[in-house]
Amino acid sequence: MRLVFLLLPVVCFAQIPTIGLVEIFGARKTPVSEIRRVAEVGSGNHLPASKGALEERLQKEIEGVDGAALEAACCEDGKVILYIGVHENNAPPLGFHEYPTAAIDMPGSVSRAYTYFLEQVKEAGRAGLGSEDLSHGHSLLAYPAAREAQLAFIPLAKDHSAQLRDILHRSDDGDHRAMAAYVLGYNSDKKAVLDDLAYALKDADATVRGNAARALAAIAVYAAKNPDAGIRIQPSWFVELLNSPVFTDRNNACIALVTLTESRPPEILEAIRQGALLSLVEMARWKHLPHALPPTYFSAERREFEKMNCRQRGRKASAIRSSRVRPV
Image (cartoon, rainbow, N blue to C red; front, side, top):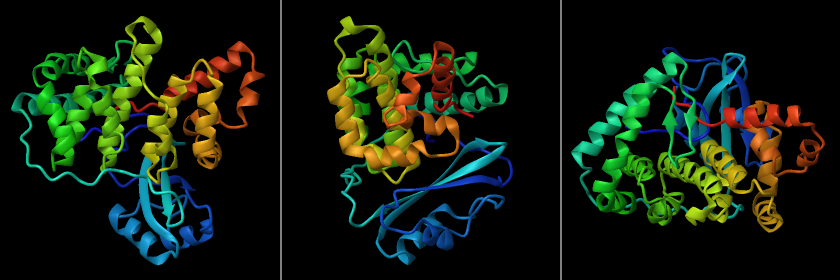
């Protein structure tokens, strides 16, 4: 019952897909050739049978690697892109929370609404109507049934606000925490949920972090369009995720930061570069353009963007927007 939702297409296929590209990141001292040797995957291969088993093998067999994460994203020439991220034992710790341990029930009305929404997300993907409007501070999909399901979250977020916050902070169920992060984004009082969503950006579970980033990115769009609302989202909340071995962490954070730094504030841009310059450079070199463009916004290649005419910039901006997750 999860929504791996922000900023890149979820891979969902009826059969085992073929890999088009393999991108490896996070390797500062570890030879990329060694990671490829242990992973035994490449262009033209099928995805590994067990994601967890390969992550464990990378961590055990490669000296200096204390964490690894695999994610498949869609698509390059009709084939999936396999991202292999590693965290080296001399790299700064990421500081995610410990897994919480409380047994807390999710309100049945929220669970049922979320399950129905995920069903409509699948239908939206089949219908090719996965585009979304974030201008209200939360996602509203173009597919009518999915949009109606999302609108149902607004009263639920209000009526169950305290329970959802409690679940987000203390529940031992990662699916429930992910659900809470997503639904809290529909609270009509966006200011009231900022701290809770910022807390969830450090959750031990990547799906929870993704849904929190999704919600905050939508709120950032609303805040930019409505400055009188007084909503302040700190870019620093996302910078650490740029160094994560998890692809969705990096991609989600990068696109949220594009929105938050649209006015090009020099002090914030410098803080981003100071905290994650090497990560931004390696992301900007990814071969799949929609995934490479957001980090390019912050890297040295930005100078090329400044030289473009309006039409060229428009094409670049469209490509960046297309790297947002549209449910499929």
